[in-house]
Length: 132
Image (cartoon, rainbow, N blue to C red; front, side, top):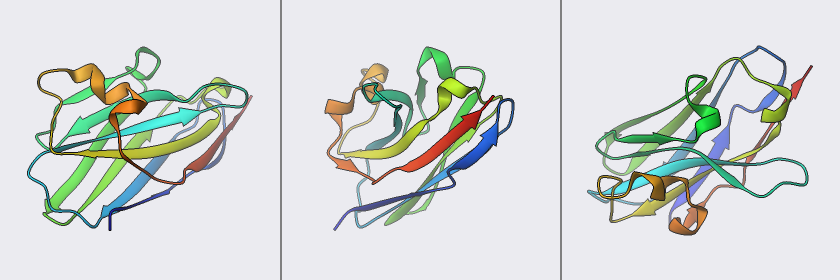
């Protein structure tokens, strides 16, 4: 059974940093991609960043230069996904979710990593609150 568990959310002041983690387990696939999404109050869920098994990444425009996605996939059956967020702004306040899709990568269509309908597996989310 695939499981995704996020952690690392919290409350920070504008300009601060947070590092989110997502522990993924329960699968063994040679190809996959994982992503971070967020949903702010009264807003639709939007893609933040994604990475595939080979390390190819893609970012939403608002995340470029401030957020960094990375992973520790040294084990075949588990992976930890990270999102380092720097220079946080009040508009970054949202619930942040990690997601996983198996069997394909980002090489032919990097933007698929930012589309929620490309993913099958989702975590429950972690709250990030940025105060001004």
